[in-house]
Image (cartoon, rainbow, N blue to C red):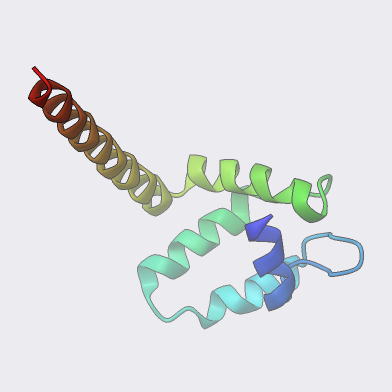
Length: 103
């Protein structure tokens, strides 16, 4: 529910009915000063309209759609997964070294 909670706080989701406020989203998009970020927000606004889901249930479909259409979000997710994989491998290597010390 992180996305809907933030959306309610900034006015892009109606607190009472849980519907997206596209007008407010467009207003905020226009305020973004970094052109690349504004472009990403415009892409998400164009492709990720949801008239069905509300409140918390609207968050995951929005995230899925944004991940599908936003190159920036795709890169962030990819880099996160690469880092997590490296963390897991480092933990596994540490565990293996620890287990081998017992012999």
